[in-house]
Amino acid sequence: MCSHSIRDKLKMISKEFYRTAIHEAGHACASWTEGCRLVHTKINESGEGETLTTHPVHKILHTIDWKNGTLKSFLNCLLVGPAAELFSDGKMGREFPPHLDDDVLTAWQYVKSRGWRAPPDFTCADFFVYWGGPARLFVVSYNREIRLLANKLILQKKMSGQEVAIFLESIFKTMPLKALKHDQHKG
Image: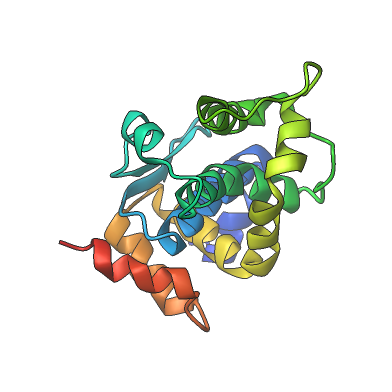
């Protein structure tokens, strides 16, 4: 039986699988730094991923506040996944693959529910360029941490929120100010 090193295992995965891991790691990193309690983040063998927080979509919709930054935080959590995936492919401009539309459409629906109106010919790519600036900045700032979490996620396939938090706390050189809020949500 041949034993493979961790590096060899990471080299054997497909590009699409790695993109999914980067995407989910981006969501998990942003959610953690924004103070959301993570339930889990996972990817399955077919390359589909999920990052789940304790803030269900329908509850967030009714608690978003333009003035206190809740909307900005929520949009950041949603848009960092696509931004991380685009960044890992070297695409941070208007090149926007259709498979990333789900997160962006969800974000767009929340913003529209609060009265924001887009021009009639506005696309998901336009929305991402318009609203995704903080998400893109987050990905550039925390690219190392996102990639490390993605590698761990590839090896484990599923991580609990507590595992993600412990891992991120161990690799962040300096904890972002918003990450300090994370302790307020424990209970």
